[in-house]
Amino acid sequence: MPVSRHIARGNIHQATEHKGVLYIGGITPDDASLDMYGQARQLFAKLAGILDELGSSPDHVLLVTCFLCDMSKKAEMNRAWREVFPPEIAPARVCPGIVAIEEGVLLEISVIAAKADQ
Amino acid sequence: MPVSRHIARGNIHQATEHKGVLYIGGITPDDASLDMYGQARQLFAKLAGILDELGSSPDHVLLVTCFLCDMSKKAEMNRAWREVFPPEIAPARVCPGIVAIEEGVLLEISVIAAKADQ
Amino acid sequence: MPVSRHIARGNIHQATEHKGVLYIGGITPDDASLDMYGQARQLFAKLAGILDELGSSPDHVLLVTCFLCDMSKKAEMNRAWREVFPPEIAPARVCPGIVAIEEGVLLEISVIAAKADQ
Image 1: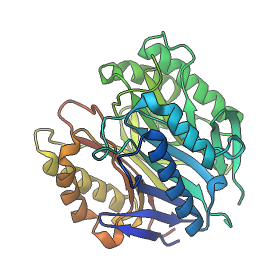
Image 2: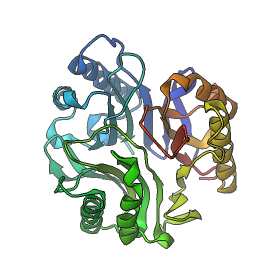
Image 3: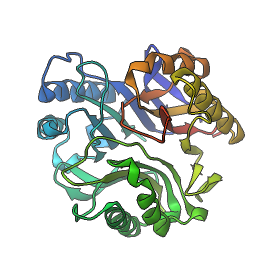
Image 4: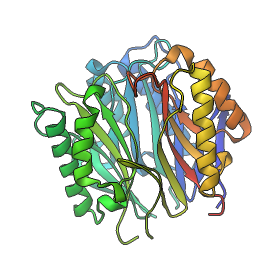
């Protein structure tokens, strides 16, 4: 079964695909001047767009690792989270508080998701 | 192949399932006043319970990401780890030292595991 | 489908295998006195060796989580990265900046990869 790569971004691809499973990383919010809610909203909207583009959807997400640079703003991230992942379709998730991503960026995610038709 | 979700916990499910693979997150120790060994014991016992409930077991675990808030206590975590994962069945693991989880919580894990019958 | 384990290392195995997918962790550079480029080079060379040994290769890597203890040296890590993962075969990746690994170790990775023949 071959590996497919999608959305080239310099040193990485934002998604790879194998046996009906997508592996996604390297998504960051476009505007690092926004607060946590604003960045999380941009990030999850981008993720939803990528899922759609690759034949998946939020209700096919299996695991999200959500790295947060400011754990005191986790509630804001969760507010944006629920807009894309309402409780009935919410995937498994882990949310570690880390030191740094890129300048100003408050969160970053990796995602494993199933393709919708597989 | 549909995605199944198990054990709803507010914003997340603690486990999702797809093609015989379980993706688990959001497990934390119940008692954040315990030391690293005590918290790790609770955490890995919870994980073992979830694996059992979902038709898997410690010897079907594939990858554990074990986020630690205090790397100086890694040996204590390993002591609890070996009680659930003796060397002959130990999975792949990565153990990054992070800044924060929730107040008092010293470790958090995400887990990918195979179902026992698949 | 049984779970296979490869390369025992005390509390863990460095790789597990299930349905043609490899889950890899616990790889660290041998020489923690090297700078980020040197450590990253050692690390990715070790990874390439493990992939080869287990019937995979860099162009079958699906997702890399690359934990960095010093985000200011990310460009050095990327230099070593490109030597193993040129852009056309680069997998999905996430690069969180964390607090600590082991004394002196500047980066650690977990990897999900497809076997070449499956």
